[in-house]
Image (tube, rainbow, N blue to C red; front, side):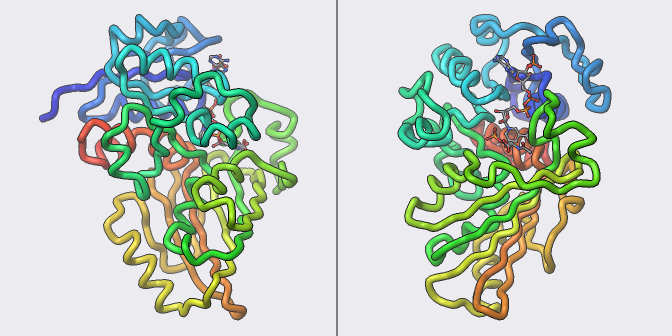
Length: 328
Ligand SMILES: NC(=O)C1=CN([C@@H]2O[C@H](COP(=O)(O)OP(=O)(O)OC[C@H]3O[C@@H](n4cnc5c(N)ncnc54)[C@H](OP(=O)(O)O)[C@@H]3O)[C@@H](O)[C@H]2O)C=CC1
Ligand SMILES: CC(=O)N[C@@H](CCC(=O)OP(=O)(O)O)C(=O)O
């Protein structure tokens, strides 16, 4: 039995942070020793999220206090607010998985989409936390930037084809928990119920992440939609390839790419989000159409494989634990 590893969660009152706490609490090796929040300091997490049954009291973030009580941290703050917290914890010797966008992009691309970076000195060493692609790099990292939810589903749907892609249309749909805990006019029940609505059609910041991972030369059109579900996200990708591919070759390529992956499930038909609800799995399906295009799908639970689950998957790798610990 491995020694317990003390884990802090920062942003524990948010949707992703609360699920991080729940996964850590049930994890066989990690021990939840600090849960930090802002507005809800002094409250118990199970008062905010009874379904997770985590009784930890929420405390204010103090880097020295966290460093005394934890060896590793999951930071689930909004982009912009995250970088300073991550830097303070790294400076104090913790291993950190950051769930925000602050360390996912190279500096120029970050500046174009998010503005000035508060801690550019850490960008270089941060590893993009998609284990199916960067497993070895994640094992040796002290800072991992967990991918966004849309890029996770899109990249897993397309990765086996990446060298053959000429252009891609990504039609992606997310449940409302992807927008975080703070309600807005766009996420109000009345705006979301009985509705499917595209948003940020002229440019969503996740297209930067897709460009960074798949290469700036690739023409990608990415259009997110908000759909009336709580947790669930699907990326439907329509791809033109440089050379046509047969259905048999496509199927063999995906089998080769993902046969050994614990959290990628190759579906035999197009997946739905219900198939992955409350799991860390991504269900992938790829097929060809009558025009020689490929249609590839990636379905995830945005709070699990799109956020908290994937962050713990990365932490498991960073700590040399079985990758599926606490997640299976
Ligand atoms: N929701 C999702 O599906 C996904 C989320 N992510 C990323 O994970 C991170 C957390 O997302 P999510 O849980 O949805 O967000 P929430 O808005 O639900 O939670 C954010 C958390 O951060 C705290 N917080 C907000 N602003 C500040 C600040 N300026 N300083 C300190 N604390 C602050 C909040 O506290 P308070 O309650 O007091 O505001 C809350 O604890 C984000 O970076 C998000 O982009 C990544 C992938 C998917
Ligand atoms: C439905 C919804 O609003 N989704 C969020 C994406 C959530 C996420 O994964 O994004 P980051 O981790 O990059 O913040 C959005 O479109 O901004």
